[in-house]
Image 1 (spheres, rainbow, N blue to C red):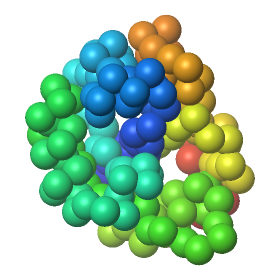
Image 2 (cartoon, one colour):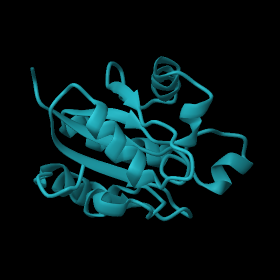
Image 3 (cartoon, helix red, strand yellow):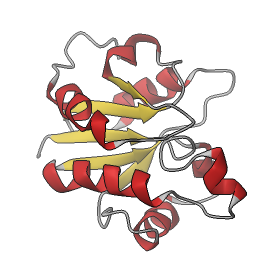
Image 4 (cartoon, rainbow, N blue to C red):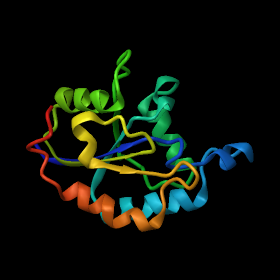
Length: 152
């Protein structure tokens, strides 16, 4: 079984901003380009953490991303479970426990900071700007981190 690296992806305030939504657009082109730079230079699988996962299947979310220009074809491998009254970090840990594929590294792209023991894997975005190109190296560094001491 092949080991995978995972990018836990939030949508709001990562791939868009309030201004993007006010214009009636789902995603901001510059944020999509920043994500594509990461996807094009890493072999990561995407797990959706966004609340959008509640209203759509993983296939629908992948289609949405691809239609928006994200290089996500065949990369969305799941979504974190929705755990009542739990922080996002707990949902990520639960996904890591449940997956049958060995995970050798992961990064979290999110504007939230409720990651509990997964916090050191977080690349936190500023809601005013979303994901920006200057965060590229930070994402790559997080993917290379050992996950051995992340309490899962």
